[in-house]
Image (cartoon, rainbow, N blue to C red; front, side):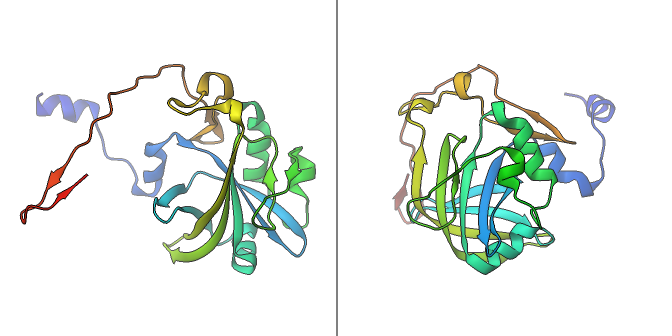
Length: 206
């Protein structure tokens, strides 16, 4: 591949928008709770942080109402919504919960969690109940890391071998610029193999 091809097809872009070029990212609806009740925020910054113990992280802008609720209560639920509810997802991401009931205005329905006081969202197909155990100030966003205390799923949304039945439930992804998408029907499964890394001292690790 010649350098001239690279020069003609690629260019530098502003660093300030670096996150845009990693999209799409799966959307999560995070619910937290304060004295005025529960609040929903739509986030694209979220990730598993540890498998053992099970921990999940969410990145929250310090200016957001949810940031103060997480500081106050230290509990949250992570909910994954199908594309069917993309209008509600967008509403929860573009409107502050200060002085308003986003459950009522969005049309989402509260359902009781089993291990914490913060509710889950009934219309979603998977839910994590989390208790904050750590937080990290990364700059514009603070990452709240929570122990996953409980996981609830819609049983008709998942196959134990294939994962989510995306053709039916269509997970919601964020492209940027107020634009959302979902998965295509393409699916490819690879053979499971155990791969070992051999360290200099001879110790093996999967």
